[in-house]
Image 1 (tube, one colour):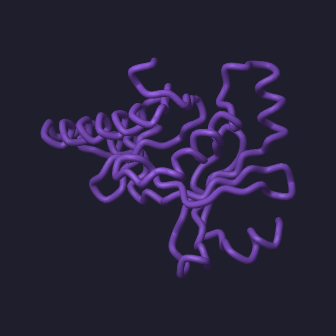
Image 2: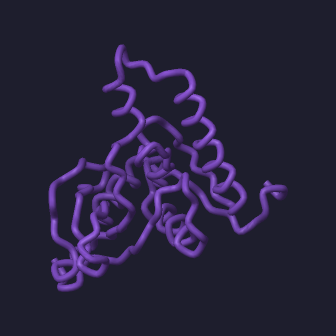
Length: 175
């Protein structure tokens, strides 16, 4: 683990295993020990997987999108990316806002009878639409919207996981 990583972040607990590596909940010493999620992407594992199936999540495409999003003003319905860096062990690390409510799949799974109230569902849908509008206005196509890729943070939906997304330096009318 490089000094930057070891000196700045302290693991609180694992959150999940993503396609190319773990996602964990960390304290960020540079931000007063604020809780952040860090997705670690093994680039060697990604290369091997993409050789077998080029339609898999592509961390290089995701990097382009995340880098672009980091240059834009934050949007309330998009997960806020705080930092990214290469780890000495050929691992790309993405530091992002932690969404304590998990994803919408988790929210639905824990709802009574696996159903959400209609008014809440309408609000969540509208928030997702606003997030997609923001992405499209900035040349980003997510291409993998699902309950597992929309996170819930204190009553607000946030689109995340940009592994299949694309970024074009054009205006939406040129699509």
